[in-house]
Length: 325
Ligand code: SN0
Image (spheres, rainbow, N blue to C red):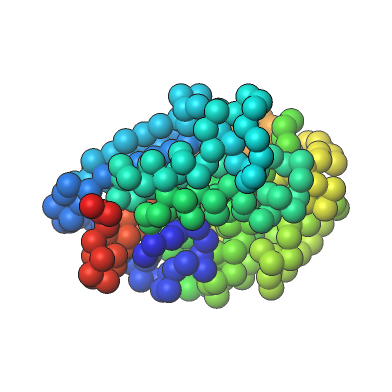
């Protein structure tokens, strides 16, 4: 695997989930696989789970890891092509990514959307440029439109805990004070649409996700209706895609509470974290027995480990080797 940026880069998601669960059972089974291979984790935005879980996964596979918060520790990055760099940006992504490719066998890269220009964000310009210019396999650590390692961990969590073959899974919008990316919601929907689950999305008017991510999901603006009989409820805020990057409402009635949980089939409640307590999700849910947020966070390790293993073995079996030297 040379690129892990969306569910479309995965040939067999069931095999990937099985691999992750096998790694979870036996974390050090492949501890020599990554020997003398270097993973670079490059962040243009903050991270807790992604950084630590991916680092831990790489260490379990015997890899060496280098982490850089490029936005704070690197030179101011230019991403536009053809401009005269006589302003504040110091280094172009062409050189910066190329250099990192010289030092790393695989690179994880995080770049959030600007939430100003929809076309620019949805073209994944920065992520694509990084992939192109670094010249080594790249794993998305959340790009402008997707967060595939999170979605894989979410799928693993549901597969582990589901009590019926075809659970009802609900993605519900939640209030927030800041305009957030659509990436987690987009990505979750994209992965859920590859399963045979009963998948429902609910949000206030004006919060439709891009059609390519909604796919065949059932949509409703009535949260109560969506929650009826749900086995899993995924809570997430996102800013408007239609009125791009805007907050259209902060209706606190959309916060998930124990009262609303009564409508569900004693649903497991999911959130990718970080979560704003008392705003997106009630304290009682997060501190109660239905919360799956730590299960999801735990599964981030196995999601990353399965993807890294795929990158290491498939590239090697293609006979190319991962190092450029
Ligand atoms: C990010 C997002 O895409 O929604 C990362 C989630 C994994 N979340 C935030 O930026 C939260 C920021 C906040 O102020 O709550």
